Image (cartoon, rainbow, N blue to C red; front, side, top):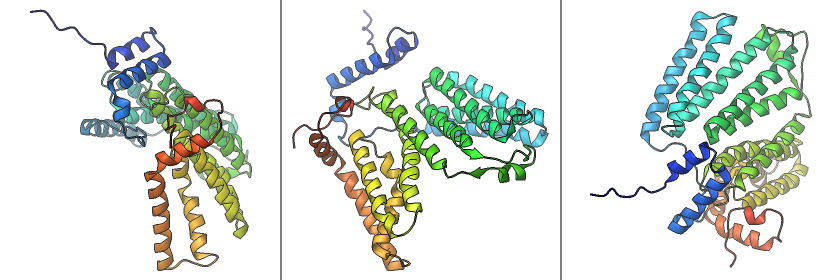
Length: 363
């Protein structure tokens, strides 16, 4: 009896990318074509923004085991103690996490365990680097910047090797830490070994807002670079962009809307509302809700002022505030697709418009 012919599937395509036969962009294009021919994209809800945290309870089970195992290794830090151990044990944990990822990430394709492993890996690299550099004459600012930069580089290396979207979130978090270190002044007399002196030596400057803005713009551009390579949101590039958009949204909203609101007074209400409106329009254009999610505190603050004015809100006022805030997000989430389609039709052609997620061309 003749064997049935084998079909070419996603696993074969990933293997082809790993072998360098096709590029990641070509693989995404082939996947989009295949899904289009099979009707899979049309079968997705129009408002769907795919996000996968774990595939099943098996991943939760394994991730819990890995967290306990790696936590037990980390407990050795407190039991044994000493500077050498603070350098050595985290580095060993990072190496173990890398070794385990070869099985859980590359072979089993388990998302949540992989997120646990990259967290342990990057955290171990950071603690080792922080402890090692702290013994050298780099100064507090140099140690803070270099250790975060080393951890960010390690996370980028993990992303390059294992293609894990969450690794880009870890990379961005450490990149933000290193950026803040550059915009922080410190007391050179504070010793690294004295934790109180270390904590008190850092005094935020006013231009930390500029640091958040610079980082937010960089993270946003990186997210759009990935997004435009997967406009149908069916591949790894889109998942990677999701994590960068989370960081970009938080940094940009807090640096712009937060800074305006922080000025205080009724005069800040309209500028804050205008800034939030701009963020909402950008979120609709790129079809990402992270910016609005990051601005929920400031949206709530504007609604609070509209309801309570300059006074304090009582129980009835809080009920009104929560109802308005909940209704706003419910309505926006429900009619996101037609609102986005209307906005995109109204906008003139601009570079990259055809590489954004598709929308209805007709009302």
